[in-house]
Image (cartoon, rainbow, N blue to C red; front, side, top):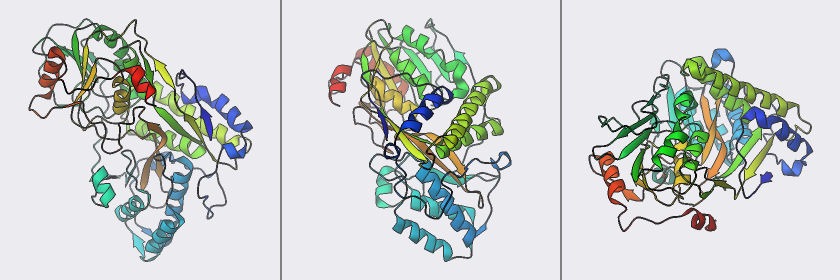
Length: 460
């Protein structure tokens, strides 16, 4: 394992920018520093097989397969998990040999397997309490099987099945740029509306809705640091994160750092470096581009990111010592320093619900350390521990697997996957946005926690 630990965290660079030094580091690392997976797939003599999805198959429908074909697809899935899945801390990325053998026996016991049946068997075999892990297929009637809730997962209950929404291009617009105009907007449903929208509530409290961190909305998200600079000088404000399912964490981090000058504990990270991980992440980007759910203005950014991932995969495949196909790059104990001219001057209320996930929860991991910030509403979704999602398509059945290639850990230790963050103040009324604004205006209740960045860093 390659580890890095420093008092100040280096800024994360795009995949292409880090490819050359990363390959150099891996080339000189001993095989002991780049361990093979816990269980190397003895059935596969070629350790660096390609998991790149052909362009024609990116959204092709699945098909029923024979038992022999299902077994071969199982071995491909096992390889993908062993070589690309970051997994939850303390858990192996792949099932035990005994569990694999039981699944193989089940597959041999039937002559044919429908795609949805095979997807459910794979979920039962590889499933973990991971909010990003999913099994399913594309086609005319797509299927996505996710992990049940944390409690139901522990009991082995629940289906976790949900249909896929039709892809839609994200709007790239900011409503009300800095200047905090004094007007009142009609309420919107959580997650609906432009990616970034700044309004004032009925009592004049500024309300900033951030509905996504998706790179497709990069033009809107680029305004977040400037908005933070305006808001941090207000006596009180609300950041509405309801329905924000995440995206690019860099946008979230820049917003948090623009609110304060305090040092904040960064999330610990553990990233899988492998050909399979790079190809799987490239598959995810390629499918979004092929589906047309990337706005034209954002396409160059996605194309550049795709090219960087494909260069990384090629460089990893060609590196010396490539018989050891997987390494992990770990960052622990890093600190990021706020970029503002001073501390947060007013009261900041972050309103969340079960729709806040992934990069949205990573933002909370930072802002919960800022003195003067309060998280209110409902529990978040609990989908932060394993991110940077890679997509794989099993070649015979067309069943898909989505898994995370980078693991994260909350610096305060308060986050639980599938449970999420618990709010400091729970809001159960009919108007949570109004209640959040009232809290910001009046101040914190006596029961609310008093946190600070330095104290929280010391807890690590």
